[in-house]
Amino acid sequence: MKQLSLLILMLGFFSLTAQDADLPADFLSKSFHHERREKLREKLPANSVAVFFANPVRNRSNDVDFVYHQDPDFYYLTGYNEPDAVLLVFKDFQTSVNNTKYNEIIFVQPRNEFREMWTGRRLGDKGVKERLGLEQAFNNSAFKQYHVDFSKFASILFFDFKNDVRDNPRDSSDLFNLIAQFKAKVNYPETNKATLAIEPAKNNLDMKGLAPIMDNLRGIKTKEEMELVRKAVRISCAGQVEIMKAIKPGMSEREIQGIHEFVFKKYQAEDVGYPSIVGAGHNGCILHYIDNYKPNITNTELILMDLGAEYHGYTADITRTIPVSGKFSPEQKQIYELVLKAQEEAMKVCKPGASFRDLYMATRVVINRGLKELGIIQNETDKHMYYPHGCTHHIGLDVHDRGPYERLEEGMMITIEPGIYIPDNAACDKKWWGIAVRIEDDFLITKDGYEHLSVSAPRTVKDIEAMMKQPSALDHFILPDLDKKN
Image 1 (cartoon, rainbow, N blue to C red):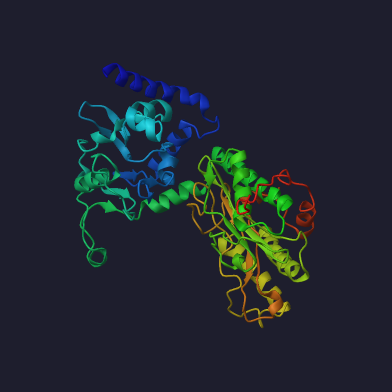
Image 2 (cartoon, rainbow, N blue to C red):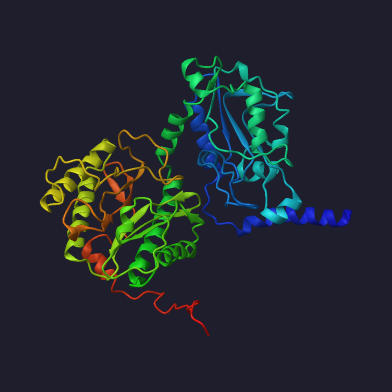
């Protein structure tokens, strides 16, 4: 039995080394994450420490968990993609019990040859040191014995605990216990938050100061990040193009979603950046429609498709709205071209120094004027729900990424996404009912303007209709009817 256990252990450790040959070559480098921690340290207030916890594992049902997704801030600073970990970044150097100087320390889940047979390879403390370059890396069981006087800091910055974190009774060093140990170390107040708002706790805990620091860091992308976003955008555009060529009346929303996501996987995107939105007809009027259940789309409908591939953690966010028949009806075309005009007006003011509101107002003015001219609203100043959302947000490790929302700066990556949604029974002529159009593109803010990242997905009426006439690689992909009896 000892020989068998030793063999399993050796296989586990050898497989971790061999895994390097199987990994893509374009992951963010350990120097990227190191440089991000240095930038964070520069922005920390005097005599402070920033504390970050990994995301919890989320249960899907019974003994099945959701695919794990790391907290984006944690990944940004470390590159670590496993649960049950905590990172501390100090403003100043600390001294350990053996007189080692350090200004950052991470505690991670340990290697476990048995668990790795079931749920995949772990880096462990040694792997984190070698692959991610964090020299002060320890197994998370050591956090309980970690000696640091948190009371000496002027501030302890961290994000307050809002998520339900389950306790694994078989693991005394899981995230649940790491959080409990941290709370014990810093005298975390387990008091009603309403009481705290009236009479703040007299301690050095800062649950608000970290957000603006991380917003400013993540809001400006490095060259490495830009390349990953560009790749995610190109993959997402390829999905939109393939659907334009493959779509036919009678397809289901779920089938169209599947084609998009097949293309994502074809080009090695690990996941979708957010639940895919595929809404035909009046379903497109639901802004975050993710049911995608409609079994039979008709040739009189538009279909709104808002999908983004996630590539190495970075996500695109692209929406195209196309006619299922391959040709816009007169009413569909009028609404579509109004939304396109609004987007292009926003693009005219998209440059460093412009405010996020400038972009929104550029779209709002065009849409209100156009809706009045079409008789859908009475006056340009009318309040209505045909355009109920903003038009710009950051993209990156989150689809609605961290970043300051005042003025555009060089290096930001954003969307511009105006839309018009006219539900059934709206207070306008019935001919407009069920028309929903959103056009969303991704942009990099440059020194003098912008780079249009998603230009390869057609967006004009002429270009969309021309693309929809092209043959698709999926034209001859026909599955048997599973409901048909033999």
